[in-house]
Length: 306
Ligand code: ASP
Image 1 (tube, rainbow, N blue to C red):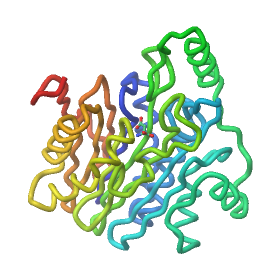
Image 2 (image 1 turned 60 degrees about the vertical axis):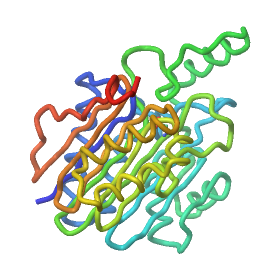
Image 3 (image 1 turned 180 degrees about the vertical axis):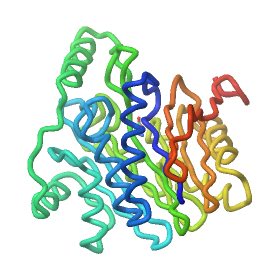
Image 4 (image 1 turned 90 degrees about the vertical axis):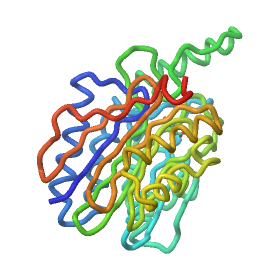
């Protein structure tokens, strides 16, 4: 019983090694699904935050100053509880800090030094999250800027090669309720202190009795259009998640000319996902079984999207 769907971010490689980690994460979450939605989400994201392949935890892209500042959020639909950490540094699992915030305090968002202080008080050790290849990528990007050139690196993934990964997110339905979680290092060379859509409720994440939604792409565009909340409203109006994700991307493109990926599940356990960029790997586990070769809808080139 139940559905769990995990995405590996915009422009993320669909090579076997990336899909396998997403699958491992989804299956791990599925084992915990009937025990606790929040625990299941944390388990999924921890697998991805541990890997240097994805732009979250260890593997995060670096900000302008060469520091990994991470955002993570978690929301449980039935209890309407939300918690997020923003611009947090030196913790391996920002999602676990967000979960602790949700379960142990009445605060909803902690940012920067305060988030780090809370993490230490909760016993999360100091862990450097800078993977070698992200550090090299940052050095190259800064050198390009110093030469007056535009960096060749991918904004989302930090890397130039075809093999890379971005922000991660997960939505689930356990037969009784919906929940969502997301984790990211944000965008390469972001301004120190910049916070993206991942911890912005209604922008990059939302969960209710109707749907669970997570987004990836340029965070500012998702925040200003309240895209995750819009997807929930479109599903509440009677649309399937696939349709809602597509309509939200068309709207995002119309309003902001932005790229994105959206993953959603509704209260009947229907999963939907769409994107308008190069790649957007999604894996789905339904009733304990991995769905073979699940493909999100690619809207690039359609409905006026370039
Ligand atoms: N949405 C993330 C941010 O803007 C980045 C991404 O999804 O690639 O921080």
